[in-house]
Length: 209
Length: 373
Ligand code: SF4
Ligand code: SF4
Image 1 (cartoon, chains in turn orange, cyan):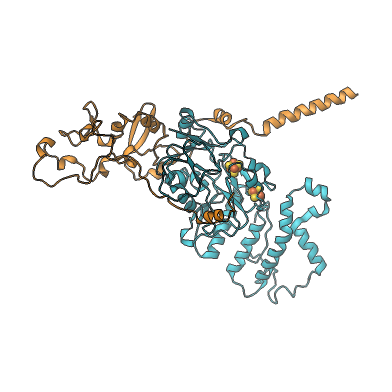
Image 2 (tube, helix red, strand yellow):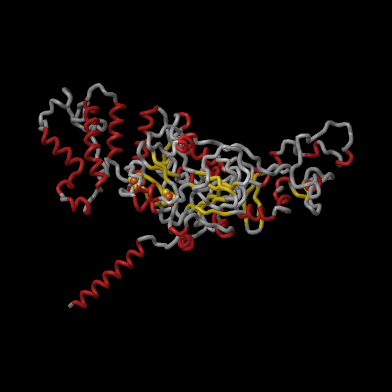
């Protein structure tokens, strides 16, 4: 009799344990859930609306295909050959007004790069790679990727830079020049966007923890 | 009105039925309610009021009330006091011949809002109704319109966040954007996000970090990192809530029903990450700064005495956008996405960068990872 009771208890216990295991948090960790439930998102939410009206170009780099903004129409002085009608060597030294006075180069040092590292004096409408091949202004990221290889990898994956789209597909990423001035790519020191005066008061009164 | 509503309706004469030609809720044409023939004695009125508010629970003993409740104790408490107050107010408003239709409607809304259920248990229809009531109520009070939605979690979505410590420069643009987006109290300067300024070479020392610096940033010899609610997958804050006013949604967001929260602050104590904020006073936002695109679980206006926190901008993210902080960050230090989608940026970060979470040993499973370039 006692034994029978014990078995019942044991059974009951087992049932409780098993059933609670199923209901209470089906997965042991969030990575388990990700593994079990992952699937490419093709749901109803999209970034189409956010991207509507923007001029975008589709690019494929390695295994990543995504959109980037069209650039040439944003450059005020494009096309360059409207002024650069002759090779640069022939335009230098003439008594024309100094152009591009607002550009100062603060990007690596002069042993590493100068204007001609990226611009081709013979063909101002295109950028030029280290080996002298043309790079379209719309694809200027290829120029940066020649040296900044780590950043390029992260950018392709989505870890570096910013998105124009939301978290939903289609993915649209900003390119390097959207945030970095190519002639002076560093970020400035500046004041923070705000200061919390209440927190400062609490801290002064020793109420802060 | 539907039969299976989870709140009580008070007929204030707005939905007039045939036969009651009167202008007040009690159906009398003249003389208001006082001349009611079947007038209740004080005792009967008391009986009826208690019956209406806690119903059958009063017939149970203490044990049953605790363990066999259809509505929990919180409801019983609230109903007993608040229903008497509101009921009295509503009845007097509805029966007075001088009050306007607006006031009656407002009383009706207040009444229905008072007795609505926990959002977590509402059907989509009930969610829509409460959202409609809240929008109408805002319009009645301020004369302005807001747009409030109640989107549910989308399928195949689990939200996650990654923060690049090497990129953050301490500009705090995210904090400003968050305050504006989420209608946080301007008086107490509530902020969901904290940016901690830490000394290089000393590691994470939150007690020595400064989260309210004001000098040019990035400051020499310092690095910056942000914290906010991490939307833990096993959130201790949810476990401790005595009234289930906070819970985890299917898409991983940990949310609060501001109308169900009793302000006990247990969750605040339980959160190991300082993720929760409490409204000690009535939150105030200048009318022209109110973000009118709202979600019931997100940035709708809160009241005094309730808990709130980062919701990963549920009002934006459930429409496919990124949270406001992600959009505002000028350095791209903030990455947001769908953890279940193997093609998402957040997944790329988790798989290709060396990521870690804060206090991982607690087993809270934050869905907020840190990484470095
Ligand atoms: S960070 Fe805190 S408030 Fe947010 S889910 Fe985790 S325990 Fe809860
Ligand atoms: S303060 Fe927190 S624990 Fe208390 S009722 Fe509100 S959400 Fe729940």
